[in-house]
Length: 99
Image (cartoon, rainbow, N blue to C red; front, side, top):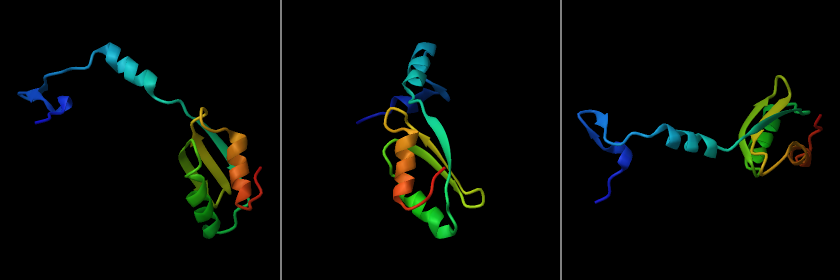
């Protein structure tokens, strides 16, 4: 039988508490991200769908926000896996002008 350590408790109190050192170690392991915003020549909802469906699967992309009203694409990414120039080229490859 397997038990998850986080689920063990006695009278509602956890049997195992994380030390401040282990919490700090977990936080240091979180990957750093950066965000870039591009102005993109999108004209319709299908443009938004095309960008969303394709760019969200680019290597290193963690979050994607596409605004037709503002004509912007905001991408949060892992800088160890990609960079703004690569992301810009990926949008341009879809046939859009990117500034």
